[in-house]
Image 1 (cartoon, rainbow, N blue to C red):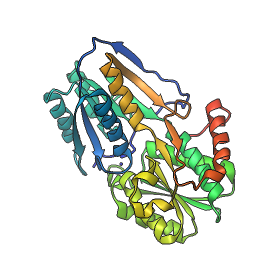
Image 2 (cartoon, helix red, strand yellow):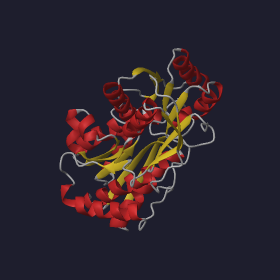
Image 3 (tube, helix red, strand yellow):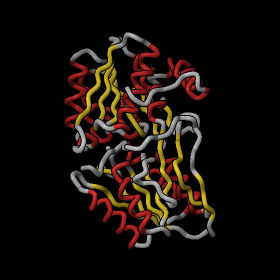
Image 4 (cartoon, rainbow, N blue to C red):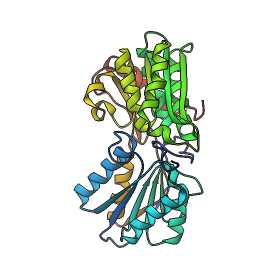
Length: 341
């Protein structure tokens, strides 16, 4: 969403979509906690991934009264910079640290080992790099939520031609693409789907480059696509701009972007794949405030309410029953959503 980025980021597997969790918790004496949050590139204000994490932090601050501090990543930073950011929060006395994005995996793993009395959460990673007895690995079934918006795209497409713009070509974003393609083809097996990634690792600027997002979407609309879904963090703003100019539709990601994007482009956002990072962050903090520390891999899938689609604007009200039927079949296991295209 700089290696520090991955605005939707996770190089770890986000589970099998079962709704189950391999998490555990340890109960400690209830005490005041201080929560530090290390954002991905784009930070608070990206109207997507980071802002969703920020919403969870804000809710915890408001409802639980926890002391908070925030720090943001920058494009092009190295591993040492991420390690230093986490250590600065620890040195400042923050007892709980949330790292937003899989780019923090190695840094969290190292900090957790070096600071066993500090508790960590990492969003979008369940790899061995970040694993630890004091680490809550938060992951999501992005493929399941993306299936639903893919179905919506196919149901709403008049041209039988849709598109997908990914920020960076990494396993996590491939999950979004895989679900989107599967959902669209479940509706229309012969639908044409264009896919384009803005950058390749180790260049993660594709999560924060609206100009590249606009160029990619422009090309798709010019070739006949009439709906484009982005999983590109801050670059998604460019996709919306392109949709507006072309008189076509777009699909948002992570947050309900028909509520968070600039007002001038909200009308083209027919739906968004909601990834409830805010819920997961709040769960981590609330549990800690109650003296129960979450650890292991907590999977937020469709069954657990961790992913969904938005209905703001009413543009998909007429197909909601069909989408909910797909949702029920995914939850029941009748539909198995792939994690790779």
